[in-house]
Image 1 (cartoon, rainbow, N blue to C red):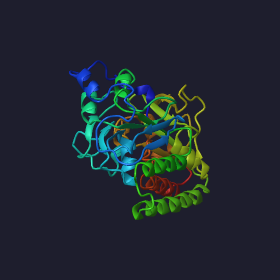
Image 2 (cartoon, helix red, strand yellow):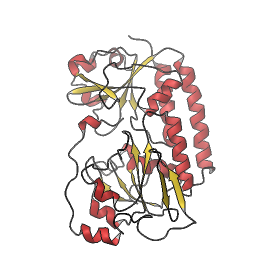
Image 3 (cartoon, rainbow, N blue to C red):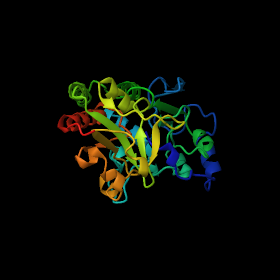
Image 4 (cartoon, rainbow, N blue to C red):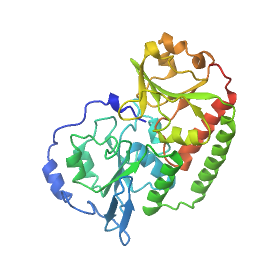
Length: 336
């Protein structure tokens, strides 16, 4: 789960010419959003809030959170994605890990970091639908709270529940969303990815019988975050398959992780550490400067593996996660 306690400054204030753009896009209550090119006889989808979102036609101009867009891309929804927001492009110009296999040169980049959401650029995409993940009830991930009212005036919104529910269920909901948007979920690429996912799940189930204990963690300059497998959708699913996870006993109020000072990094014993691989989290090379990190048994044994703490919720996106964790457990020895 993204570290909600480490959020940056939220985007605030208006933008030049916004009033005119809002008017051009229909403003609040515009129903089916803005822009042309819609097809079909109407569209409806019940999202993670339990809210039924309806449009006059299947939306052809979608703006989505990067991870959301990447999952839809895997299911075949591509040309309809006209804008993305969230970590998309690294400083070197290469796609962020959250972008998956998406061609990031195609959609407009509305924002590339937390708190970044260019409202004027968003309006210019003429959005018909806004889609994002929902980790905390009622909150659209990476949509700045201070400008969300203006953002929400431009197009209807769909929230995809991404926490407190097993990962396989989230993927199935994404498949339903993609199909409603016109994707062929029986296409060879999708069915092959699903078969790979199912095979990988059985491999992990078998590997987990070894009793190797795993700790899911994220590194920051001052803190080590230990994630709760009961909240994170991927960890919840891995646990259902039998993986023995460290369960932190002092989880924060949002229910995702426990914050440990580096002096207390050895509070929990684990044979394997899976480490958050996202851009904003410290990677093993950077963590070498932390003596308490180097002293952890799993680190000493070289039993640290990357963790996609924010899964791409498609079969193509999650199958490698299962394979990678299975491999890490298969190769590990007990060191606690």
